[in-house]
Image (cartoon, rainbow, N blue to C red):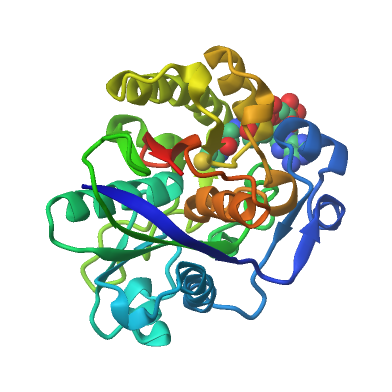
Length: 326
Ligand code: COA
């Protein structure tokens, strides 16, 4: 048996913030941001909660799959910016979509979150535990950003996207669905991209932590991504005994167009096979891969039988790749 994606949906906040808008807040320019990252606009949540966005994306994915919330066995939400410490965003989504027969929990792997959630769903499905799983990637990173820090505030955006996956037949076979995956973490190098949680505020506390916002060593993150992403894409295609030239689409985490161009070059694959949408949405972390997948699905760019690599990378450090047949 394997895991098939049978429905996709997204929700992006209405409010658009352009590079020129940011140039009014910090010392930056459209030219600097666009030339280094490929980003021109991002959506920022002004009234929507993460759970609102996740539920809207989930409703759309369920509709696309022709399913009802009550048919879902498990809800997995990938997020690093949840509305509450608890309940989980997954439980809030469960309530909103009336998925009364589901278990629900969140999973945190930063920008690799959706990919890790897909792998987790696949493991549950292959173990015969669940049949229909709702996966959501959602972020409200705008609340974790220091809007005075030009080195990070220009990069990120808010959004949500969801997929319904179901059990299909054939294990790593020619059947449509998941053909193979790899996932990795390197906690030792995690300090290059961090965001602290709540401070210890008990009467016995010994230290004060310094910042509550995202902090990043951009150059180190860049180096990590351009090395590890091609490496894990090669690993997954070796595992599935697939020639890289036969892959139709490479749907990568939308952090930076220069990272994606470098990955394409290192793999010797034409850039046209690497669709990008960070120009409109910026880096939406766990939501970025499914937002792009949903956009391509809606545009009719995904044809049955096409081979697709999904690859994510981010804080942790975490990274990985999945090969699916659409
Ligand atoms: N606007 C204008 N200037 C800026 C700026 C901004 N938004 N942000 C930084 N700068 C300045 C720096 O202060 C520095 O100035 P200095 O030379 O006077 O000190 C200069 O630009 C170069 O900074 P640097 O950090 O070396 O730029 P860079 O070419 O490495 O680009 C990133 C910075 C963040 C765009 C790049 O490192 C990157 O994309 N890294 C990956 C980040 C990422 O994708 N993270 C998420 C992964 S999930």
